[in-house]
Image 1 (cartoon, rainbow, N blue to C red):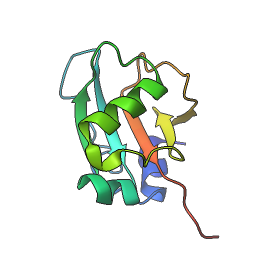
Image 2 (image 1 turned 90 degrees about the horizontal axis):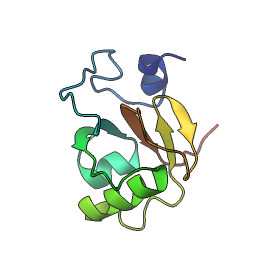
Image 3 (image 1 turned 180 degrees about the horizontal axis):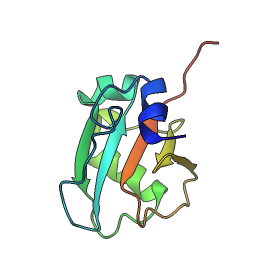
Image 4 (image 1 turned 60 degrees about the horizontal axis):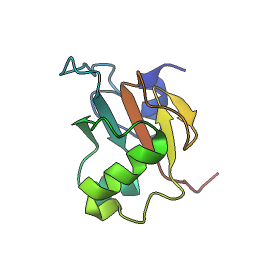
Length: 110
């Protein structure tokens, strides 16, 4: 599934959903982080570009890092799914090469 379609289905209305997301840095540590639903409300933003420290190597490291730099997320990411470049990831998965990271909280409905 293409990024704009997946992100649009999840309710994201930013540049990534429109297919206009472009890297703003040449750094290998630069990622676009997308926040959905309640996480968007908690952070006050739908997306942001981050330069990750070298010690942030896995999804688990990323979650810890985000809880440090965005205190509103502290304790709120335990049930959140993380997608790296449109593929759901496990806590132990490496971030190497990922450009877009989506944080997707559980959703209800049918």
